[in-house]
Amino acid sequence: LVGYRWNDAKGVPSAFPFGFGLTYTEFEFRDFKVTSSDGHARVTLKVANVGGRDGAAVPQIYVGFPSLKPVVRQLRGFQKVQVPKGGEVSVAFFLGKEDWSYWDEVAGKWASAVDNGEAITVSVGVSSADLVWHHTLTGELAFK
Figure 1: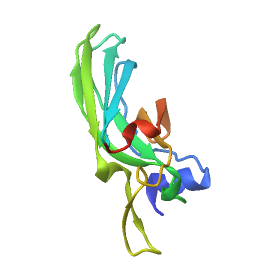
Figure 2 (figure 1 turned 135 degrees about the horizontal axis):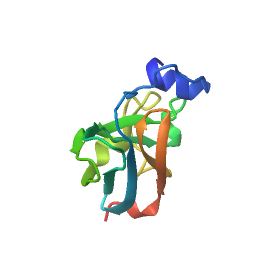
Figure 3 (figure 1 turned 180 degrees about the vertical axis):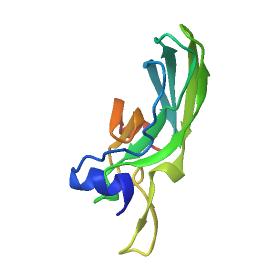
């Protein structure tokens, strides 16, 4: 394990977590919604600039499930969005079977946390150490 995955697995904080960045304004992530079916999920949110300047925010989405151990979660996407002072921007992330797949060393092939019936935790934040929202997907991802 290296980088943020090592820090998460060992519970050791990083001086500069993955995705860490400085900005001259403040953002809020809000109005999270999840829709899921047939092995896919869509996560939407709004990024609001509550600071005094125009700026860019980079929401990141992480996915975690028991079969990733010792990894706690892994980055599955990010989007850089420009948000004017006092403004709000919508962001959408799309997740699919590759996002809950992992290499099963014993079987020597790719496996799916969905097929295994594992709970999948989806998290959104501004860095790997500053996750502001979490949602657990269970049976709603089942393939029909």
